[in-house]
Length: 397
Ligand SMILES: Nc1ncnc2[nH]cnc12
Ligand SMILES: [Zn+2]
Image 1 (tube, rainbow, N blue to C red):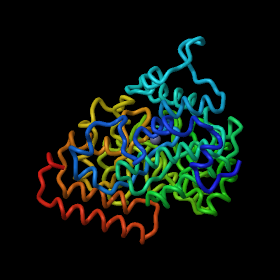
Image 2: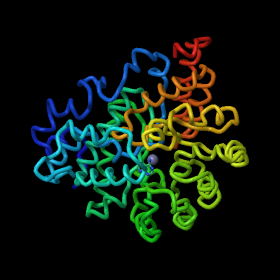
Image 3: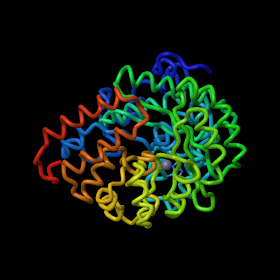
Image 4: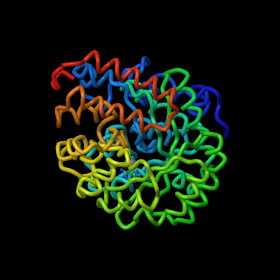
């Protein structure tokens, strides 16, 4: 169906009384002022600088923001059963919460669960509710700009119209801009373990949405090892001709050579994850020289066993080498935290200075897919914050 101008009214129509009142509070994980109380430590009270930091999130899969309350509500609304360990024991809030909680045994094990869960998404208003719930939660972490990924093929393969998914997300994005002042973009990700021809078909179907601005760019995700980026060179060349921004997951589940392949053969100016690029000094120098933005996802990398702990990530290495990167949540419902939690985890592991956070913040803003005016607005807020905390100790940030 077509999206309504107000996502709250469309959600109400689809979800009946479940979508109001208690349910809404549970789904949002917070009270009606947008204060969150789930999935989080005392980040806000203990980290005045990181809480107030104007954040750009570039790597968040909307399907990865399907929290346990949202899964239960959409499963009931659309009459789609959730996978359960036993047929006569439907999942409960507690059992689902446990299932979603990290660690996950592998990227593939996580992806299998994630794909099973997203079958509860059927209508434009479901996508609207999902995107709005995420954007509202992100706003509580002072995310000022968000670039939202969507696995288009996973939905169209289940019979959901591409335009329904896109229209639903667009409605939530408009509302977030109007009510929260959060700017956002939509990124359609091709799944690299599906045929290249399928990606090309999806790109062509998305062309009108690229032209309208409802879709800003394309990405490449899913199981990485064995599916090198170069296979999609033709798709990415056509996407660029259509005016799409481009990014690709690389260097998460496979090695640094996949990062090089994505840069060389897909021509991307951004890499999602990219942390294994640190294994090649030559590639590190090249990424720094090109100004390529890596969208690093600390809690994701730990949750999927890519690294044993956040302190093992090449954060210092990248800062020292001048590699630009942003910090991101990837799939917050599955990896134990939203964006502020990821910022706090980085600070606890590395004890960065105000100046180093300035470098990260500027790269995040400069690397966002927004115009110069929006960048200047966000930079102005960042510089004012940095000035206010000049000379502060890392432990007080
Ligand atoms: N971390 C991840 N890696 C690859 N594909 C994904 N899709 C959602 N999350 C992903
Ligand atoms: Zn990802």
